[in-house]
Length: 396
Image (cartoon, rainbow, N blue to C red; front, top):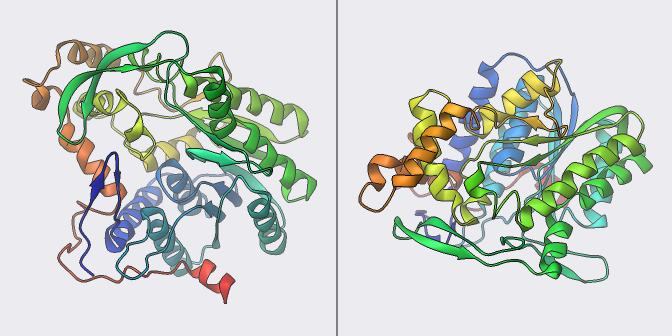
């Protein structure tokens, strides 16, 4: 079928298999061009199909020569419906890895469940023995507990309402939005979904099964951002969950002698998660303009190459006062944030084009789903029923 983008809200409901494949190929080329990562050889990536999780898998496979087992929760194409971008990304990654002699297998299912944890452990024990790095990059809107209770995360403040500028991605128009405070129950649910409990469950399950190396490393991802986003992120319901994540890194280090837990604070980028957060897309479009003009802009793959190559396995993680790795250091540079703040104060619908890199924002948005990628013929008929090799083998 001929696949075109169909936008609904802050997501694209279609994905282009050839475009996703080309995006993965380009990330592989970036990873290959960077200095060798002297680090992990057997890696589990939980949340491996898009964004920072996919970039982690690519950086580690092609930067360190690591065998990677990915956990995803994606849908294949069927009939006239395309698969998810994550499905096509993973299929492409496994194709390239097989071509290049790299171990790569994938498990598709809800990472919160005991069933998927056990399946991952069985695969590790059979194929790898023990993993020496666990990347926890799960970004899910809800979590179903074993007793059937469903927790859903919310994007709200904690305390007072917060009003600031935002952009309507459907019209590219700036307006004001007011975020209401979360209830205690909503905060608890957000922590359940986006905090560290499941990360701890994964490490405990791996440790109990002797499927993780005694001196292994594990890393999860977070975002902090500038003061203008703090009420709805750092100090909001998401922030409560991220503080639980930080505490979990410390608990992992304390409880599983030899296993070190870290949290990396990454740069603001266009992801499916960030597109859903009010205020953030407008901030990102201004940030892109400033950082590109300064030659500081990085995408997911550049961030992950720097995280693993220079920080986690570069001899000095350069922890801040909270014990966090700050790969957002270029974003948070004083000169960058001063210029962003200046543009933020004056921006309105009359100067939107000159004050932002909105074209760059939309380019990244479409490319998440395999569109707007140079070298791809979007008028060509493509097969949407692409299989992920290891999953196809597992179901035979």
